[in-house]
Length: 174
Image 1: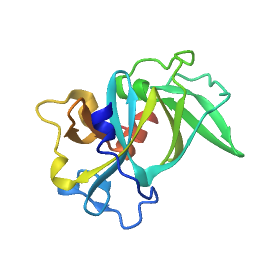
Image 2: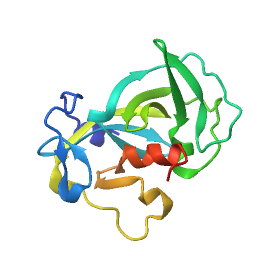
Image 3: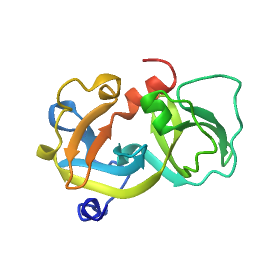
Image 4: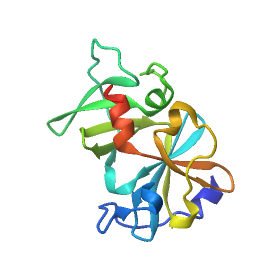
């Protein structure tokens, strides 16, 4: 992902000054988009940095006796109980696989509260001008409603996720 890395940008993840992006597609840097790029299921997704609280490695999860799209269990993060979701499972509806080896855990904050998204790996932050971010083309299917915009990269398609819609889907509200 060297070409993706060339577009990385350092910057604050606090979202200060964040506004709606082009046509309300995504919040991000006032002059464009700013996301944490993660890899999962062979695809690259962007998580808006203003919603990323931290990146951690969870040692253990408490399983739950419920079946929910991508739900892996609960984690205790410094005294706060937070649901943990397999990002691929939330996106494509496949059952979460706790033994899959994916160990990159990103704590994000949504209107539903904090949640952990587990991915295959982190590629870095990506920032770019608003005109690079476009709506998904054609019939994107069920995943399309969770993607607020896409950015064609030289070696992949960066799909920027709408974390509020993703959380609604994960919690069975969509």
